[in-house]
Structure formats: structure tokens, C-alpha cells
Length: 199
Length: 199
Length: 199
Image (tube, rainbow over all chains, first blue to last red; front, side, top):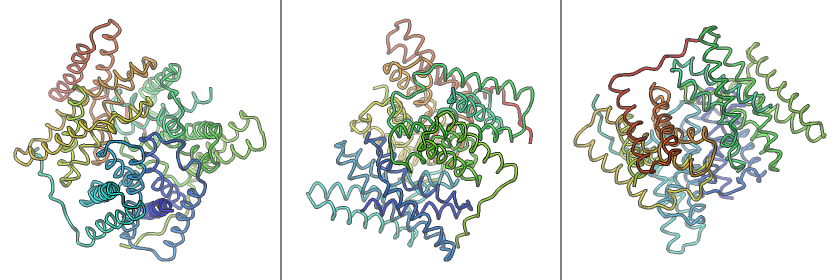
């Protein structure tokens, strides 16, 4: 069930990003699928998990389509603000990072690679979505983005070491990532900038 | 034979896109290879088909090189207009979408995933080519692009259900995709735009 | 040992590129990992080499982190010029192209595909790094980039045919690629431009 929430969040974010970029209706649906499936696809390619989950899962594809079409209808009547995009993106990031971390733990790879795989799974949908919209990815534009995902992945791995139940771990890690993103957006938290290069 | 036409079309489109972006000669050849091979490579990664077709197929690489060099010579003497790029791109999209659909059908994945795989195979070469040229991908900029590929993939799958011969299916689906792209370019057909977000 | 030099070079280049793009500290570390690992990851996906090298190699991840943090400290105190980025990028390109060529030779694929795999492995880290920074990739912006990597890959394959020892081959090919990049930057060497399209 959890993965459907993450995938639906990114599907909604895809339509909102397409609307921000002034695309047409079908472009919105295309971007919903790309945003929803890129992270898990890259994770499965990297971990060599086959067949790819979405080639076998018609429920998943139906949920993406429903979330995409629902968002089309919603924005037609309610014209949400751009920041709605950032909120659903934060939810997608939180859920998909945790799912990626779980899959990487199950694959038995080195712990630093588990953390990286969590961040990669969570952030790839956003990165590809925003590059296709000709926007700088939030991953690199927002100060508290990759580090929020990393914090959630670390929390999950640590709790998992202590044998906490997977569902509790997942909920806590999701709340942490989502909370960090929301707080950083509301209070405009910044990390120190890199020094400027010469020339 | 069919795949050589698709691959050659995208190779030509790569050189034309490089010329539009004012690159040098060797950049044109690099982009020919990237445009020609990206779609099939992603398809084979997603479907786990190994070894990758182009690592074993010297004829294919020769055709790409010949198409690329031939285009270099052609544009040196004839200076084609930018719209030549869109026409060969449309041919590449049509052929490669059909090839991707055939491969996905053979892999026995869920039908919606077959259709997605057709569109992914057909459009990826264009998307990567245009992102590398710092252009918005046609996939998201043109209203009738992804939906034209999807229509061709649907037609192929439906005809295949009725047991029509593969060659006939392929020709009809290619004509449909290519025709939809040409007609939409000539008549500047539009899909409805997404509503604007607030803020 | 050799691969650690290549990977560390790209890690340093990631932090420098992040500084050029005015990112924050953590963005610099993220870009160090992306620049250092993208080329080898794509190579292993294409050649179907599993498990991915970096999921098993904590030394490698430590070297990337150390190179990234070291660069953060260095630029804090010394503010290097932007051209430092191009020099470490040239070293990374040279080393990683050779490593990619070696891996492709070991995989027994067709010779043109070996050369392509060398260029792909060497250039992918740079391409993804620069696209994420919203810069045109050097691969397509610089006239002597892909062709320098190709020259090194050809040299390695030719020497390998003559049975020269792998270490000597590697050093000569690295010197060739690095030298071609430096010379082309110092003397601003150009390749002929593609003709302009009409319209």
C-alpha cells in the first residue's frame, strides 16, 4: 500500500509540474508516469531486480493514471498554487526514499550504498521531472532536500538495526523526511553556500 | 531491415540537431550515435535483454556512421531547413516505436506496460538528443508527439490481437505515427493546454 | 588504484561544478558522488556486470567522500579559478575512459563497441554533472573532448593488440587523453563547425 502513496504523490507532482511549464493535457499525463516510475526503475536497474515492478503491476499503472487524471480535473476547477507541487513532492520524496531504503537493505549491499540507494530512489523522479521541464532540480536547488532524504534513510537503517518493526520504522522515517522538507520550506532554512570560484 | 531505417533516421536527426546547436563536426557524429542508440538501449535495460544489441552488431554501427557522415556532407552542400530535422525525427519515432512495441510484446509483459515501452523506445532518442542540445524535448513541447507514438503502439497491439501479419501491422502503425506527426506539424494541431497554476 | 584516481578526480570536479553553480555544501557532496559514479554505473548497466562495483566497495565511497570534503575545505581557503574544474575533469576523463575501455575489452564485445564504451564511461560523469548544473555538457561544447577520449581508447586497444603490458598501455592512453585536453584548452584548438541550417 505504501508504495502506491509514494507513486501517486509523484504522479500528482508530474501533472502540477507540467501545468507550471504550460504543457498540454497529454504532456501532463506523460510527466505523471515519468515522475512516478523513474525512481523505482533506476533502483531496480541498479539492484538488478527483474522483471521491473511496473511491467507486471496493472494496479500500479491504474493508480498513476487515476492520480494524473484526477489532478487534471482538480487543477481545472481549483487552480492550486505552485507550492502545492512542493508539498506533494515532499510526500513522494519521503515515501519513495523509505521504499528504496527497504529494497536496498533486502539486497544486502554495503551500508553506505544502502543510504545512497534510498536517496537515489527518492530523488530520481523529481530530478528527471524537473530536467524535462527545463527547471533546475530541487535536489540541487533546495538546501534541505538530499539531506532530508539521507536523514530518513539513516533513521530507517538505525531503527532496523534495533529490530524495530518495519511499519513503525517506515512511518517514523517518512514523518522525518516530510517534516524536514516542510519546515525548511516554511522557515526558508539554508545550508552554508559554497565559496565562489575565481574567474 | 526495419530497425536500420529507424536507427538511421535518428542518426540523421542527431547531426541536424547538432548543426542547429552550432556544434563541431565530431559533436555531430557523437550526437548521431546517442540519438540512434538511446531508445533501444533503454528498452533493453528495462526488459533485461542482453547482451545489448549494438555491442554485437557491427552492421548497425556502420549504418549509423554512414548516415551521420552522409548527413554531414549533405548539409555542407545543401543547407537543409530546420524542419528537415522534424521530418526525419518523425520517421525515427514511428519506426522505433513499432520496434519497441514488438520487443515488449515478445517479452510478455502487461499490456499497458507494452504500450509504455513502445513510447519509451521511440521517444528516448529524441529526449536525450534535445536535452544534450539544451532544447526542450519535442516529447513535452509538441502537443501531438507522445500521443502519436501511443496511437501507433495501440494500433500494433490491436492488430496483433487479431493475428494480422507482423509486417503489415508494422507498416500500418508506422504510417499512422508518421502521418499524425506530419499532419500535426503542417496544420499546427494543438491539444488543450493545462490550466495555469497560481503564484 | 587507477580507478581511485579517476573517481577522485570526478568527485573533486563535482564539488567545483557545484561551487560554480552557487550550490550549498551538501549539494557539493551530492554532485561529487554523482560525477564520480555515473560513468562506471552506466558502463556496468550496459555490460550487465553485477553487483554494481560501488555497492560492495566501501573504500571507494570513502575516497569519494574524502575527496569531496577535502575540496570543500580547499576552496574555502584558496578559492581556485574555474579552470581548475577543467583540469581535474580532464584527468578524470582520461583515467575513466581507459578503465571503461579495459572493462569493455574484457567483456568481449565488438571492437567499435569497445571504443564507444570507453568514451561513454569516461564522459558520462561529466555530462550528468553539467546537465544537473544547467550547463551545456563539455562533451558537446568543447571541440576536443569526445575525440580526445576516443583517441585514448583507440590507442589502448591498438597497444593491447600488440600485447603491450596493461599498465604501460593505460599510462600512455591516459597521457594522450589528458594531454589532448590540456593542449586544446591552452591553445583553444577548434574543430570545423557544422554548417548552419536554414530557417
